[in-house]
Image 1: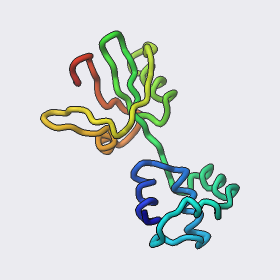
Image 2: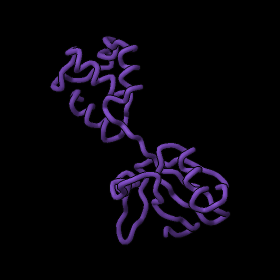
Image 3: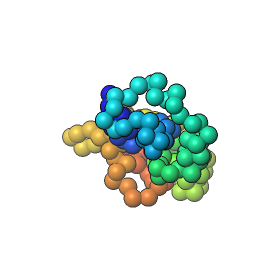
Length: 143
């Protein structure tokens, strides 16, 4: 796989750490976008520099996941949030109660919507701010 393709996948799938490693190697001119990526390329990394890049978030990653929070035995709400804690806090603020549990789902999980399906990753693009409620699920039906 080319460095460029891998780098773009890092942004598409929010792989912040690997993206920062590749960024460092590109800046240091140890690899180019046209090269084929090899795991051996990572042996050339200055880990302290990459740690600083990640801590300073120089690539501007703002991870948002999807969390299922159980309201009662049959009802669930899906919330886009940066973390499990943020999802729970948002739930408590909106519903004035604690969720029974909270589980993170893959953004690539497909759900039925209308006559078609959509992944949470694609659905997330419809929101401008987070946390946000993506939808409700009642055992046996998506609402």
